[in-house]
Length: 190
Image (cartoon, rainbow, N blue to C red; front, side, top):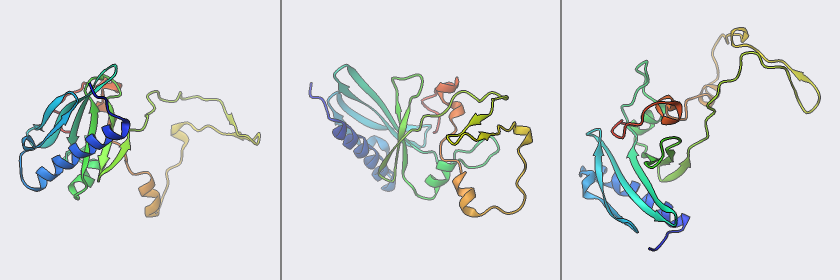
């Protein structure tokens, strides 16, 4: 079996995403596109009856990479009914597709292709800080205070837009992800 370099694997991944979005732009079914890898021919398919995606495998020396590519659901909302950050981008015309390792139960989200660019998933802290941490010393020997959540003051007034954008949600809601004990549903519109 021929094995691919990392650059070749990334090229396959980007070509899958490009082909899926081309089908979508032309109003064609995702089943009209396919990719051939060293493991066979794989066709695009529907997820949650409306999202374009594809499951495909790539042979590697110790087995197979089992990859799922699925477009961002432009209608995804949080518990309060607000459109999620990446859903908003997708609804504005950005092409976002999530890359998931189907062979993993935890840390399955590998990253995303956004407007043709690979963005790896960030490692997310999984353990909350304890409520009573000791003061931490900086490199200059100054003792820095540790505040409990209840003692942090509310900020009054209008904040500049650049501050609000800095704190904008940039990652999907990982509370549903398997690494936080949530179930992985392959038909869930991510």
